Length: 286
Image (cartoon, rainbow, N blue to C red):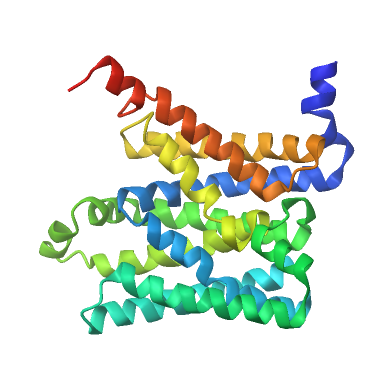
């Protein structure tokens, strides 16, 4: 009975916790596969840059509609797509590499967004935007998160084969005329959409936590892409659930609590995983 009261009862008693749990489930289904593909494509830092680049759009939504997660999310999508488009143009027409162009634009966007929020709001609003609050997700935001996750899974299912080929061997993709750049653009759009969905729960600063930490942890337990998807999604779902439990019982901020639990899964995987972990290094030294 004590375990029921500790682990399950809060989700029956409070509607906001039910919504938060459903939001975590949706994020786990959409964000985890995107994180796995970012890791496989060695684009983890680009995802970090994009997570900060959505701040000006979020700030603009806040100025026009207050703390409306749906409006701020829509602004974040627009800002993220603009930064991704500009960075791609710079990479294409100059000698600057893609990671450097992304870093340049995201730093400008981050500073611009912080100034916009500080001019209109206060320190509490700024903390809410930067670190999020999944416990305040309303029906409109929940529909937005579920819609982005569903769209992500459908698009990934449609472009799965060419995207995986472009991920592992872009030169071969180019040789057979596979138009890998189109799939790259589609993938970047999905990254932006999922960053905005994760922003609803974790804020702009930590939105990448639900995407990257489960994906990195999964690398220590599986090799095949489909199994990486499943394990990363499972870790993301458990991180959301356990993070909400900690947030409810110990009054922790929900976004950092979820990221902290996901970080715990990463540390455990790093130490005891089947592939390339510290345990493997001790048992089978080279």
